[in-house]
Amino acid sequence: MRRIMRLARIRQLARLAGGLRRFLRTPVTHDQAVADIRRRMENRNGIFIALAKKLIYDLPVSPYRKLLLRAGCEHNDLADSVKACGIEKTLEKLRDAGVCVSLDEFKAREGDFDNPYLGGHLSAMVGVTQPRDGLEPKDPYGDVPSSVSCVVDMYGPLYMKVGELPAGELPVTAVLRYLDKNDPPFLILHGTADKTVDVARSRELAAALTKAGVAHELVIIEGAPHTFHLQPKQRDLRPLVLGFFDKHLNKAGK
Image 1 (cartoon, rainbow, N blue to C red):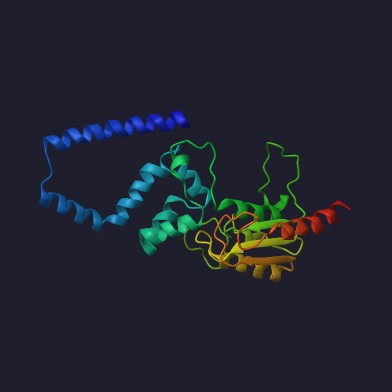
Image 2: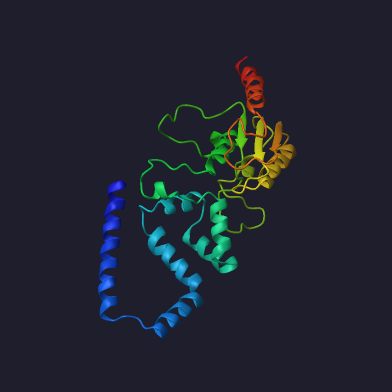
């Protein structure tokens, strides 16, 4: 992957060098530059959609492509969202769906994605899905069951999906799609100062768990941001979490 990214960078620099030569031969006047900027601004949405297809969806090595597809956002979904609510709102939705890459990740200085949206979401998904849902991996360790006795969901989003959904339809990555009364107990932790995943998502999950008849506890930490550990300055959460595990894991082991 790192070698491919370097080759892509070399090709990009070669294109820039060629463009510089053309610019120096025929420099752009002030009026031409103003007219070009106006034209681009008038067709900003269309240019964004076209560039996304060329530089992301048609480029298998793009890290954004994998994140977009994981979030259930095909190119037509992206285009529909941009047309409906504009680029800025679409990018906010993408961010909330976990489509984000750090500079170090993009430049391959970090081997794995450390996406701040996925941890809590995946914890909840492991808790609520069953083999019958068709999400179990075949390998590696396909013979090892993935069922759990309890779930600690820390500030996770409910939907890894961008764009509007038809009424009543939930994507396969939606936690609420799989809830039933047989799901394991949940402990949900969320901070009120979370700017990445709104605390309303955890309240929505708690309400859905109540409706489904699943035992749970929702703990809201006043002033805590996103990605806090078990000892935020507001409160030591270790006794709470360890007590939760002790109660439900010991019960499962008996």
